Length: 201
Image (cartoon, rainbow, N blue to C red; front, side, top):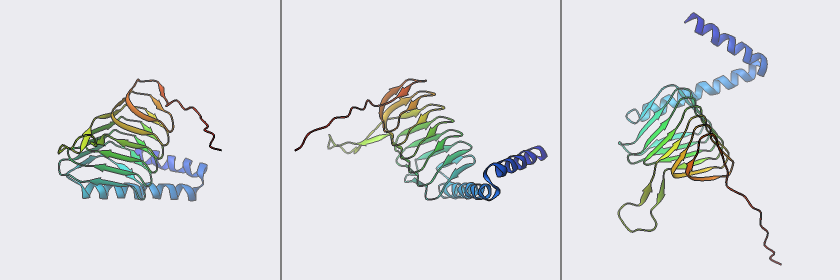
């Protein structure tokens, strides 16, 4: 216990020297509030959320709309501001340890989404494991499919990840991409962009 305390104190002092002690205090106060907000959400959905220590920053929220829905969050997951995580029906969301989810991200799960450890998700990313079933007038209004995001994946800003997608370990998803299908491990995925100009006058 003494060794751990000494290590934490040393880290804080070094961080304070680098950032400035005022800014180091503000940052760590923000982290502490995020952890308290995460604990509050865990209490609110105590039957649905299984987790270790994680942080849920200002205006981010977790919504669970079914007694069957399950969320598993590993240790040291960090969810920044204005993120929305919604799990409904029989949805299962697995977020492994040390995953970072940036500002304004949306995760909508009604079936199954897995995010591997050490994965980093940039701002404004949307992850949806379902589509609206607009082709049929059957009772099932959603078309569902699994999403698996591997370990140590980097997902760039404004990416949309659709159902039936598997992203391999160490992959990089370029900003602005729309992803559906298989992305092999250790590759960079990008949608080809071509400029076109149409004369209108």
